[in-house]
Image 1: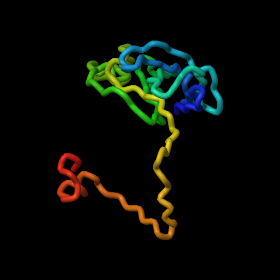
Image 2: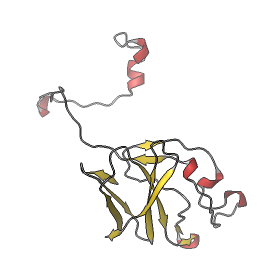
Image 3: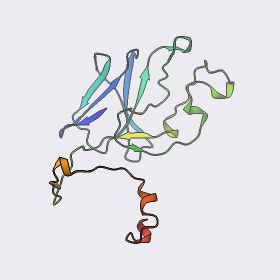
Image 4: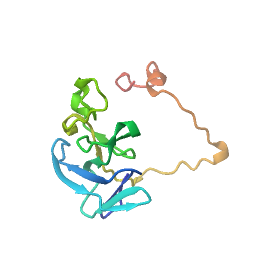
Length: 169
């Protein structure tokens, strides 16, 4: 994942078979790739690198290089932008386009290799600040033996509740 430590961001991605991982940084809209950086370190099958100038709000994704051997289960394709599986926030939307596939979709052969860039058509990740500033909020101070947790579907629970203003239901 991407971890902000207050000074910069550590980016890390697991891959046992990749030969290279590139971190792609995007502008504030997430539409234009502004920089591509090869992650320099590889430790215990994790590619990683630290960017001292990166901050919360940084928009990123990965391009992963490696073997394209569908018969062996390997379909690395650096033309395809990959999301961080540990991302805490995503930006943008997915726009249907054949470039999203790793193979030439129109051919009907899923062992072909597609060279089109998928970045314009897919979502990207955003670095977040994991700190929560409590401000004037206070801990409820309810003892654990008096605490009850329950889950509900908020819309269904409040849709007809007379104490909830209609605009909030």
